[in-house]
Length: 168
Image 1 (cartoon, rainbow, N blue to C red):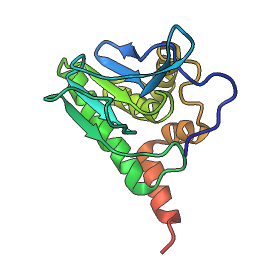
Image 2 (image 1 turned 90 degrees about the vertical axis):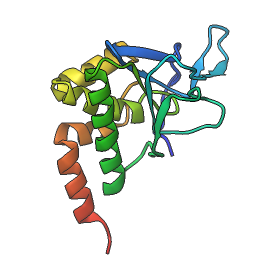
Image 3 (image 1 turned 90 degrees about the horizontal axis):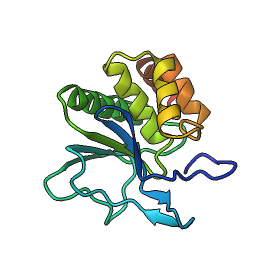
């Protein structure tokens, strides 16, 4: 399940650099022809973090791809833990000088959630990180208000609150 959009939710680029070494992208984008086109990752990146998976979209053999299926909807405590872990991995890789792509279906919400959290590991405040993601990727980035709430509350607190609200 993905958040509902008004207007054109597809980026005109396969991926965008948010800060040096940290990129956000999706599995599809709007090609110059106006048609939707697949984004296939080869060896452009040292590390890929995928929150959505589609066969045939890479990355190339030998490139580490951390895959966790995360919905563009309310997340469980376990899914929030996955987001935290992936953001830490992405942030550490960028800090070590690697090129990292964080991707989901369209490259806006789930990748934005991990991207902002990774930026936090790199010293950015939440508001600045959200601004950067929206400015560098798209105005459509993080249009899932729940994800913005998770980030502004803090993912550790959101994870704790989610686990408390989980049915027995």
